[in-house]
Length: 466
Image (cartoon, rainbow, N blue to C red):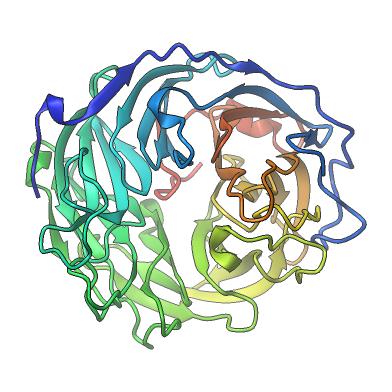
């Protein structure tokens, strides 16, 4: 744990990069394609950077990468929202956008502070940033550290963003095996906030990720004095042992505090948690899908917490798993019904346009649209683009809209596409790994009720009811 002065991080304010005009969409398919998954009948665009959308989806604007967060490995990652601002993570730091005019987002500030993945969450004036990348120390100037060094660091950094033009580094908290992602869980009073930290491991021979690693880390943050944040617990959430014998721990945890529940996607397992006491989560159920799931990546509750969608990140996000040859049940979503604290699998959904063998594509980050009585998600699929799909009928999910670009070029192994796609106050915001921030609009009878909803603060891994 430690702090540092203003000189220790590089801040680039009010970058001059302007949004680009949205290109005209290429010819698009039906707004309600087949739910069978990728195949020869439906193909995504095959020309480099060619844009295709369903008739009900429009690319409003793209804000390309800019400033010092525009290098060859300055990849865009996760998003969080507060009022008129979007916070976008990047392997080299993070950017704060003014989205008061969603059709004309502008960069307010950039902070250069390397450390993959730099996933972000916002609470009040505090921005939390995950680092799952051993550094030589916790500062923003640190380089990649020797894994055997006692000074090697990875974990969670906290910034004060009360002044959006000049974020300030507050402190850092080292966590076991770092922080691949994290989730915020409110305490019983506004004075306390908990951070559930997910990370893979173990890595024998390292100082930051020693075996065993069958737990998560829980950080307690005194919101009035965040510099005193510390790890208070490391509960083992695998009563049956970890399903993946090589990599344990969790990839992502989604909390639904109002329902006193959390769903953890933990590499080889899905875990349902009771979080009535946020400092002492209890395992309700541990599930596995050894036939179809390779990497349990993330989870999303429906609005009334009677369903959970788990995603499978087959290939780790860097391979082409949306080709016509890949089974529809792999690298897909699994829909589970939730009743009386028990999960029951119903079916799978995979975005239905086959991608080329040069496009990394698999189920990735998404969010529920705020529509009472309907279960509709928007979801990122890397170079598979953005899919909007309806799972109100658990047994018959269907896509109702999409946006995607053709291959980014450069041949097999290129990393690109939508990392996260979330619905916020009337628009879909997509963090594209190499293209920057996309703003999309969907106009459809099924999704139009969501346009009326307004949220003051939005972290996808902390769900709220509508």
